Image (cartoon, rainbow, N blue to C red; front, side, top):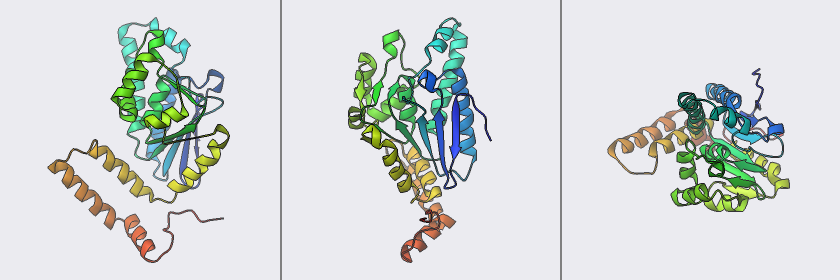
Length: 266
């Protein structure tokens, strides 16, 4: 059992991990301790071969208010090198989340400000409430969304990233969906019910196939073809076809039955 002060990590028997931001009294704003504990929790998830996918959620009313202002105030009193070390730790968190081997789904309610948009952008998918509020708020306090910017640009595109970074205007779940930050948005009262549908959908899929597909898409990037990439894709499909999971999936399809990884209906 892992013990944390600012996050929670839960696992189901079906292989679903849920990583909770757990500072509801601070609107799940993150500080140095939370960043460290998130990194520790991601290492636990990465090392567990039974995990099929991971949900990223926030306890309480809000997903996350971004950086904790008390922590930011303390950072402002530090010298350049100390601030650089803090920035590197946050950058490592974003990279670790983006590169996690299993699929990730962020579930957003309430406020998602500043660095919280980085966490959402680093996940493979995100859903949220229609009335959720998003904001790249850094310029309002004389800062900039530095380490999260590559992931935000990938999620919503360069033009939209410029607008919302420079204006710091707020937008809701519907606009977040239009921008591509959210895959879907739902009334807040229906968010948990809709999440169960997403979980059920993901549990239909081969665990190793999802991991391999995520690795494939990371390698493909923007899709610019090259000879090495072509060879990579050829080897990727050959490997999965001869794997135990690939064989089971093909046989189950031909035999018109559920593959072994699909949970048994109660």
